[in-house]
Length: 191
Ligand SMILES: [Zn+2]
Image (cartoon, rainbow, N blue to C red; front, side):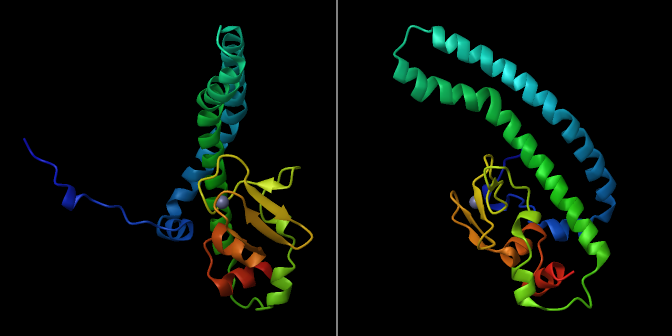
C-alpha cells in the first residue's frame, strides 16, 4: 500500500480573485450560472432552516432542564446547527461569486488613462461599494465573515471590522474587494 508522506503534501497555489479571473476567464459564464442557482436556493434554504430551527427551539423549550442552560448552550447551538451553518456558507458563496463577476467587469472596462486623484477616490461614497444592511453593517471581506461585522461610517467614509479589526477608507476597501493595487484602486474610484 502506498504511504502518504506529509512532507511532500501538495499545496495548491493561492490565487487572488483577480488572478483567478485573469487566469481562467472561461470560468465567468460558469460563475454566473452558479450565482443564479445560489440566489435561487437562498430563500428556499432560509425557509427550510427557519422551519427546522423553530421546531428545534420548541423542543428545547419543552425540555426539563434549567432555563439558563437552555439559553446559553442549547439555543445558540440549535441556531448555529439548523441555521447559521447552512445559510452562512451559502451567503458567503453568493458574495464570492458576485465579487468575481464584478472583478471581471472591471477588468473589461480597463483602468488605463484614469486620473490618480487620491482625494476624489477617498470621497467616493463607501456605502455604494459594499452591500450595507440598514443596521450599517456589511459582511467583512477581510475575514471569513458569516455575520455582518464590518461597520460602515458614512460620516468619515471609513470602515471598521469588529472581528478581525480591519479598518480603512474606500481605497483600502476597493484594493481588497477587487484585488487591485493602490494605484489601480484610485483609478477605479476616479472612474
Ligand atoms: Zn473582518
